[in-house]
Image (cartoon, rainbow, N blue to C red):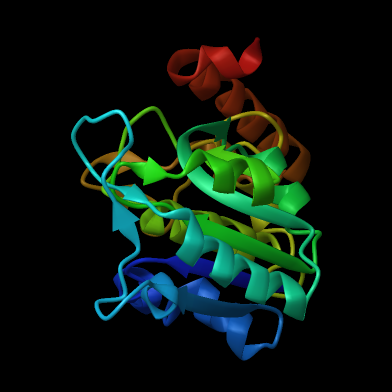
Length: 224
């Protein structure tokens, strides 16, 4: 799988792809990540990529010309199943969407910055808009990194245990149950007996019940 990310500040997230699961995915040849600096397509001597919004108001807006130049060049090189814009008013990022995106061969991510992106770019190029939550960040770089990380961990062959990602929160519509490791007795707090029983059926039932309980307490909206 290949993921291209267009950003005004690609160095902001470059280091996040050099460690842990995402790095492992790249080392195994299961994932390619390519960062593209929008300033390389900027206008004039100073490589301008933003300008004041029409109609007045605070903030700056990413100009259409540099973005169009960059996106056109990438789209000429390969076919992307989705061209994704990370934006607060996009579709909420949830695990089923991550799973679906992981089945693609090429994804192109646009990390917005400043006040926003000229609407004509969204209308002409973007096929999917994604939000990571109801809050605003300085730019779309971190959301792009989060989406890439979420996709990487569900790619077949990335994790050492193929079933690990399948037991994460949200994979079955529930939050994950509590987990424990050694020692069995930590400062008087003991691991539930069922987890030490060796009865796999009982353990699975306990985990499912705990997942339901935790979801009901913390995210009842998921059960609806």
